[in-house]
Length: 139
Image (cartoon, rainbow, N blue to C red):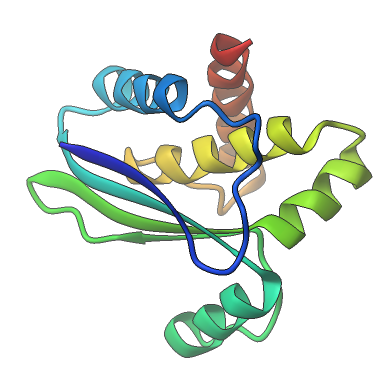
């Protein structure tokens, strides 16, 4: 099992505690899924970097805060790209810290890997409740 953090062209928030977040990811997966983790790579990048990925792979021409590529079969395998630019803007808009928003968005990506969707209003509400619950465990 590997949970890695990488910086493509942006820096992960200095106060981000990788060891604590790895433990939370393991907890989420064990509680929410019957699968085990093969690997999850979290990649910090800029808006322009993630926009290029969004255009190339998803055919979407807009900024987003996160893209989760799920390669899972019998085990969870994923690359999760997160735009630090977008997270910074979201944090300001939502009056939360950059660290809080980063953690929320990464939890969101993990929740997608264990089967949660945000394609309807009711699914979004469930996902937000799960994000809040797991974010609280980091406090």
